[in-house]
Length: 222
Image 1: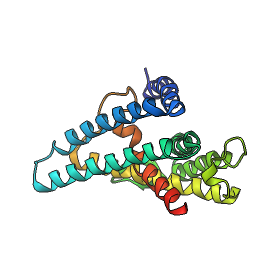
Image 2: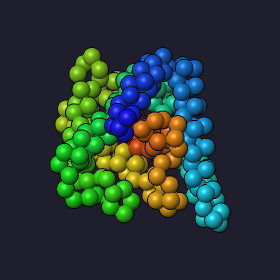
Image 3: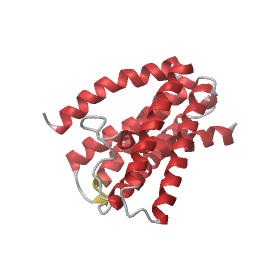
């Protein structure tokens, strides 16, 4: 079975579970975030402690744990501490998912110059542009009255398009951060829990940065 087929099958299995947890909220979402956090902490620890175990490795270990816990707290804040928390959480996840999907297919189709060849050799500028377009499209959907969260009711279509494009860049930055750590410690994937996708960190690396940034926007904007 090809890697793409494994990715599609895994996504089809995981997506309903993720959406169900987001929709239900309450303890269901807390269990979901707890499971993600435990898996991510385990994978980061295994990666950081695979080095020479010098002081800098323990600093990276501690910083990574803090980074993951801040991101988990931000996701809980988005879903459980806001009016229309489901819509806000779906917006963030949707922008990141759209970035990944559109960047993958536009990068494969168009190719071209590499974005960060020493860190993540498969990422291209064409993929980045495709990801920004996809993320902006998802954000634009949330200007419709049926989906618009109360916290974003004053945001125009242009603002949402800019938000989507910016979060594609933020998501890619989060992705590259984890990729740099994998490169540093000489590992291809952070784990093997998800067939075709690697570890949990490989799947949520963009969200780890996007969720806290979006939470900060809501807090500062409120």
